[in-house]
Image 1 (tube, rainbow, N blue to C red):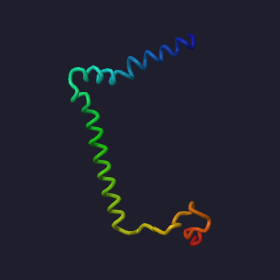
Image 2: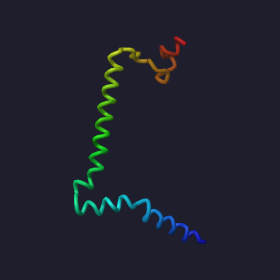
Image 3: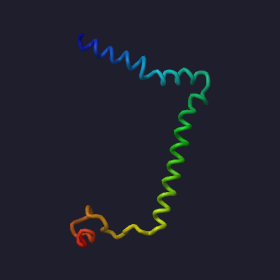
Image 4: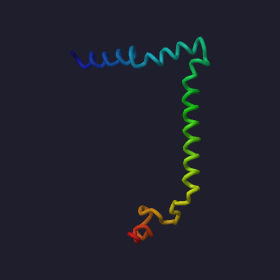
Length: 87
């Protein structure tokens, strides 16, 4: 088996198996645009819900007021940070 045969086998596998869902969506788009792009709309709704959830969690965390908000609260901001001097 040559290297060329190996890569042609990989190409055949990718085109016939891995890209089959994408080819089906491309054919579906010719008959029904809304149905073909329904997958995109589902992903957008999932992302929007995740963003809303994330923002609600950030607001809940911010309402507790437990975050240390000094200018040098983190050690990577400098050697003389207040956090390193307290340890």
